[in-house]
Length: 332
Image (tube, rainbow, N blue to C red; front, side, top):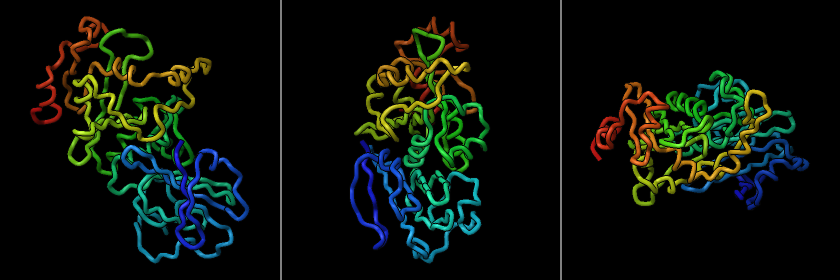
């Protein structure tokens, strides 16, 4: 269970600690409460969620701060923007001014105006940016085929429902737009192929000069206590590396609208009973990195090469040293 904090920014608010963030958000607002702002932020292996209550009796801006922030928004009014990611600053929504100076996923619920908004504040904390997407994208396929602009509009109002490939491409586009290097990572089974669960697409993201593997679909990063964040090569070549996973949002995949085209086959039944460690071990046997230059995959020794040739167009696999040099630009 995550903790919810009511944080006071002035004498209007008091500091306390509550349990049950979901239940709190679903309650009918108390008399005098017209808006609520929540922020989800990634800190180490802990997710911190903060609730800020707004009092209806306040006739002046909530925050009496004289400051100049980004001019990319007309008067910093979120009603006039179509963006999802914003710099730190103070922003107005339906006449209420919000302190959005903490990086993370922010959710605003304005009861009086029957409106809500979801947005991401980013400056330089890449793990928190990845966490923001993990919180607001659920595993499903309702939104897989929608164009980028439509997805941004939908995410400003609620959670998206996407599978691994579409969500990795979607986040990859956002990262590129804010100047963060990333590349698509494709893992495949090396044996026991089936018709529905043969591969998984993730991202590698450059953080502090190092490639870091991020599974937005399953809300995971991989962190070794001694070596730090792990990359795709580490996962592919070290048998126990998948055990060093830490959560970006909720623990494991959340499912939403995950069915076949008929709408009758609910794949969520499979996902909700998934042993993630066992599934990673089966899926992460063949590694291919999409870097725009082509190339060959890295295959784990326990992969079945005859089955691989029967299912893919690979003619051979790179040995670990050549693969590492090609994709990571140095020797191990």
